[in-house]
Figure (cartoon, one colour):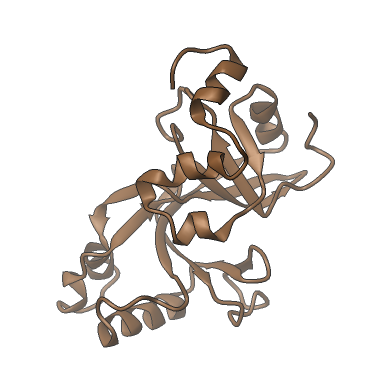
Length: 199
């Protein structure tokens, strides 16, 4: 199937088993941008080996903030020291510099003001659910012109519609399988379709 003539964003890229690339094995990528100039996305099911507190400390916040043990996600191998906030906040204006609208609700931003607001809310309501469902992500995944289309053509990725529940409401270790299940598939079925062995 050809995908060059239509955008796959917003959507998911579900890694096919076995992908053979340690950066993307068993990953779900939230595809934010896709077009003739390439594609940009963020892995949403790989936890970084650092805590939110460590990221906050590196960013210059105080000692209290540095104690936060919340999860940080690895968005991909490109610019791994760059921090992003993914959130369900339709009021965050995509016309502002550094803010990208993924769909009607989801936004991704690297603005310092967004991090400041997130830190303040974490400190005011520790342990409480975040109504904006904010996630801190380090790095991103990028593809040059035509690269993603070639990888999809080779069977490396299954492009599917975006489902916000997979990103925010499913345990991180189950997101890959759940993304397949939403479309009536399993990793084992994908292996069979690709002519491989067991997933």
